[in-house]
Length: 132
Image (cartoon, rainbow, N blue to C red):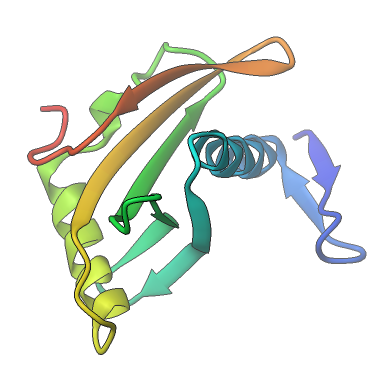
């Protein structure tokens, strides 16, 4: 098993899969920043589900982002975001929004496949029912 050092936690190592996921989430945050969005939360966990990224678009829309990062397309990328996964994402989003002022909300999927030092990107804006 290949491991990598996690620079955020001294002495901690990451499996290759975890390091790839972390790199994908960082790429996704940069992707939204380049579009003028502000990253306001990342890796939010609740019992009902988790949120990879929460961003605020310039128009005030809160976007909950599911990031799928793969080393290859062999096992699918965006297809892994099912109705069940989106349902859990929506439940987690409801927890996150609880008590916050009203804002328009959107759910996006960013599918990333490693391509050399970068990623090939598939961007799905306003996902309602998953890829299946």
